[in-house]
Amino acid sequence: MAAAKALVIKSLKSPADVEVVEKDIPIAIPGTAVIQILASGIGTSHGYLISHEVPGFSFPVPSVFGSSAVGRVVSVGSDSVSIKEGQLVAIDPFTSARDDASVEIIVGLMDGGGSKAKKLADNTWRDGSWQTHAVVPLENAIPLNEEVLIGKHGYEVEELTIIPRLSVAYGAISNVDIKAGETVIVGPATGQFGGAAVEVASALGARVIALGRNQEALATLQSTIPRVEIVVITGDVEKDAEAIQAFGLADAFVDFTPHSLQSEPSHFKSALLSLRKRGRVALMGGLGGNISIPYFLMILNSLEIKGKWMYTRDEIRKLVKMIEVGTLKIGKGAGHQVNGKFKLEDYEAAFESAAKHTQWGSSVVFIP
Image (tube, rainbow, N blue to C red):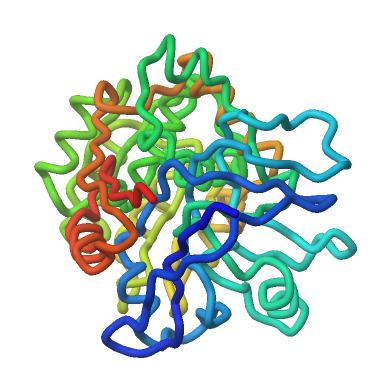
């Protein structure tokens, strides 16, 4: 049988203990699909995550990392009635136990914690997409209209690996029910996920007030995406709130505070102060600590705060439809840039490149 290749994380230590290994191409069994990986995304922090202990973050070892990929179906289980061999698909890494939907993992990234999630990751879905051929849950192979995406829109396969990132943003936007004509604050907005939220909200017809500390990065967002206003965060809560309110009170606020921020973000309260009555707040970041809220303001203005973990299967499929019909643009024309393409064997250079490209619209991929 022809050989497949995989980049295996052998153990969790620094420098990264990884190895490219050969194995047989798997054959799909009921409930699964085997996907030939054409391109697989490398997150900005992935090189660090596979070589360091991170509190609250775990994944099985040995295993194959990689949680955003596009590929072609090689084989499907006998229970497949829709997915066909040869079909172009995006791999949705977010999956749950079939007998308990509350048990969720991100395949190729993290097991979600808890004994049930660890069992699901360890025993069944331990390997992600940093390999030539991946076995995925049948329902996590998201069909892509190749004729439209590649043929009509002219997107390259590696540009489609941004779909899971945009789906996370869509999950946040859906969480607070953003509608056309509304105003939504997004902050911080210049990172990969915050920037994606700006894109999705704008594509849905909203006006976006983008918050960030980098004036140049904010200006790029504003010049690329329709209906975007920008506010540079100074750290002065009242001053920043006044700057936001200069554009009028907002209907909603989507927060993507990253895990890397150790202190309480000043922009959070500035945004809360800038919401109209019955405003909605979506928490979608990775802040590890606690955050304070203006308790009486929340009551007085009937504000609603909702956390959201990832997205639903329906939401990722709707996101794909937005890209296919052209409502949501991706690729070079939308300001996106694939900053590096690497073979599995060149993983050191790949991790180094990914760590440098943290800004909105950037990506680095493996081409196995």
